[in-house]
Length: 302
Image 1: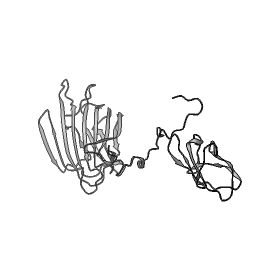
Image 2: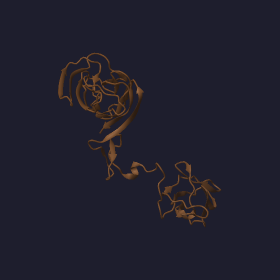
Image 3: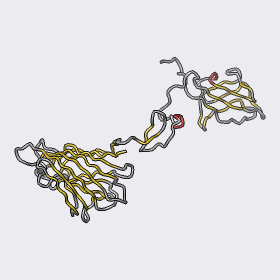
Image 4: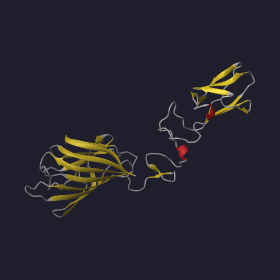
C-alpha cells in the first residue's frame, strides 16, 4: 500500500531504557538497549511521569528519538517508564534473521543432525536421510580424492555417475584416505569378496596384499568407446570409528572392453580394511590412463 508522507511503523512493543531527570531540562533521548529509537507518533506511546500517565501532545511531544515534556522537569521528578507501541493494530512482518528460537518456543537441541518438527521440537532426522556434502566433477584427472568424511555421520555413500576412462581395457581402483593422505602401506585387506555377472563368477580372497582394491574385475576391464561408462554406489560404514576395522561395499555396472560387443558387466565388492584408523575419504584412479569425465557425489547418512 502506498502512503503520502511517512509510512506507519508497524512493529513490536518496546520499553525504553531508564532516563535520569536533569533539573531544568524538558528534552530527553529515548533508547532501547542503548540504541536510539523513534516512535511513530506521540499517540503510539505510554509515558508515565511521577506515577501519572501523560497525555500525548498536551503533556509531551516527540521529534525523532527526542521526547520533550510540556515543561522543564525538576529534581525529584521521575520518568517511570516510556512504552513504544508501534502500530498496535498489526505486528507486521518480522525482519530477516529476527525470529529466535525463543519466539518459536521450540524445544530440543538444534544441530547439524536435527530438524524442526511441526510441533516445534527438534528431533533426529529419520533413518535414511541423505545429506549431500560435496560434488566433484572429473576432467582428465589421474586421481580423484573425495574427502569430507568425519564423525558428523555414522555412514557415508559415494555415487559415481557416467565415469569414463581415457584408456581402453582399464580397471577402476580405489584406496582409503587416512589423515589426509592416501593409504599405501602394508596389506590392504584381511578379507575381500567380489562377484560379477555376464560370466557367472563369485570369488573370495583372504589376506589379499594390495595397496588398492579393484572396483571392476581384472578380466573384464572397462571400455572407453564414446558411449561406454560406469555407474557405481560405494558404501563406507563407520569411517571415523577407531576401534573396529572398516567395512566397504560397492555395486557397479559398466561397459567392458570386448570389441564390437555391447555386453555390460555388473560387479560387487565386499571388503574389510585391515586397520582401525579413521577414514577421511577415498581416492579413485584407473589402472592406467586418466579418468576422462564423470561426477562423484558424497553423502552423509543420518
